Length: 612
Ligand code: M6R
Image (cartoon, rainbow, N blue to C red; front, side, top):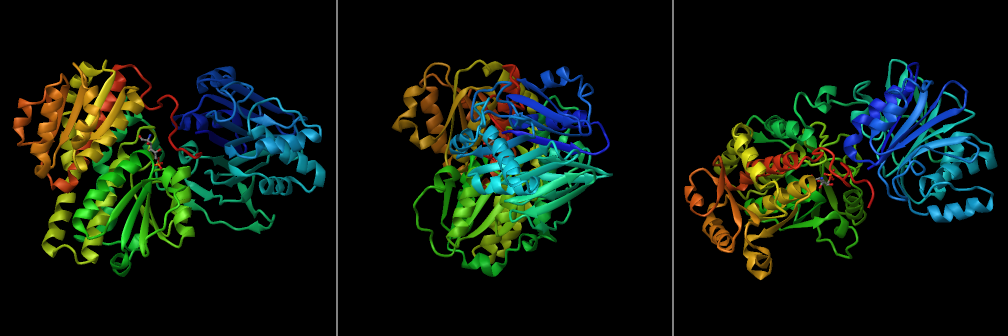
């Protein structure tokens, strides 16, 4: 999705803006632009289609643009094709107001029609231009200054937005406002920064303010003033971001994805340690009591993409350890379903970014229905983290690669811990089983390290199959859920058509797609289902499939069926997904590298999907 950076201070703004935008490249974009102001001179606006590199070259790394106050943007096209004309910043007709915007203004046509009647003209196809000109319209009509004009525009606009606005009459100042689109403000050493995402400003400051929904902020050199939509001044407290700047750098790896795959043992251990103290689960930080866990009668897990796949795996674990029925729902579907919630249910929203528009809407839907909500979230202070009744923070640190790996793995472990916590609080497992599960969960980081030590075999296999057009992932139970994630990893970064099927479903249609050389990956780690899945693997093999088997050490008979076998260490079958997903992440990664794609920034995708 789009990215925003803004700066006002004593340093030259353009290099800071470009540096910040480069840290947001991972979010996905198709054009970029900056607007900078030197004192009270005119705005200098520079925009370029395509990679940020063009903008950097056009401005000599920002050095050719004078001024200490400016805003920048990377655009991911929604309204209007990727082009210089549609790239941000956009300006009012007389360049009185210049702004950048993330989100979608739903009623932009209606606003355009209204403004056209007042003589405004429109150059681009964007919804943003309508917002900029609406602010200019109110600014001139009421003559009550920037905060007033932005507040009036906010009341008129429907949709989601994070806006950074500069006014000709207010040199050195940037005004920001947001609704359902993230934005943070950082202050350090007399300089002020604003960004849509933490990595953009992490290098300069870790002390940030979170601007709330329907709030406005005035940024000046080294200070910020906040207002509510009624233009009343409000106070905010600074929050320290614990992530360090290095965590958002590649650290010697060729790609962020590979670095993040290797970080998994550490971040999983950190996430476990955050709630397991002295051999017992303690949900004090999450604010979840045993009493509350006892009284829950049904769990809904709602999420998108990989986070949804975590929910799919978690469903099997929670249902096996507790008597709680679990429904796993895609947030984009859930939010529009006319369903009756079961009394005393709990909605668990899983989201790395905490800003996914559909997941946030699902959370609000649940709250409006009086249902208790719990977020499993990675980004501290994100919208879902702030709005959920309870938050279980995963400690994955900044995840830059669009294809999630470490955030997925920490979410999965968080879900196991919740399952065990629920089972214990509800007295549905014995003390012995509780201890056994906690001992086993603590072995996951080391077992992942062992799998990573053997990554060259997967690299070799990936190069061998990199030219395939189609791939199928099959498995049963937890293995099916992990296959879904493996399949997404492959398709999103390798652009190979890939599907995951419950192995038992093959005969109901998909098996007709298997022909000579079709790549099939059989995930087979669950002892109770092993023979059944082997049978399904034999079925595809006998129809010409090229077969990779993924199973636990000891199941060596797999080699009688599969063309290539990957083994993972033995663990409790409930946790096998945390191990079996690792070779699948590596497979997706190495195939993408072999095909020569931009692994960290796959086409058409954005790291956090803040629009519907
Ligand atoms: O930030 P979220 O966890 O809410 O994001 C959900 C999905 O957009 C995300 O998992 C997406 O599917 C990733 N590209 C998968 O690698």
